[in-house]
Length: 168
Image 1 (cartoon, rainbow, N blue to C red):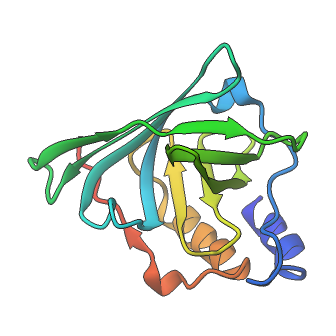
Image 2: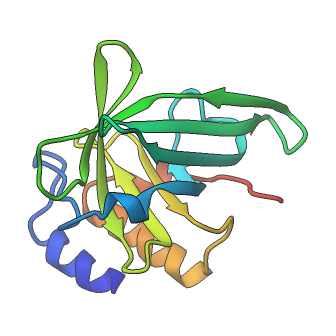
């Protein structure tokens, strides 16, 4: 499945073009907890262990987001951030604005989502940050390689990616 997406997107993607999203996201199915498997980290995530992002849709349609991790190791200090997500006007529900500091909303795009909503890839038009996330703390090595190839095919420098340690 990943390779079909890779082949269809890689032919038309470059870092200068908008990052293509999945066709449609069922928001109810997307809500819940996602383990961060790998990423090109933001400054907050550079030393994150056991990173988990949790989404819950509020009555106003915004997404209450909770990002938690351990800093520096599995026994490190627990960190928690609560940005708010805003689903864009795009009928796909795959383009969000993520607000960490009012009034700025960061670009957040669901660029891969498997059919059973167990693995996703979140990207940004700038191709500066990317996240592979899953409902379980680990994914199959072959799937990881396929997703990394997909991420590279849409214009990311995958040499900047790091695996997020998960131990539960």
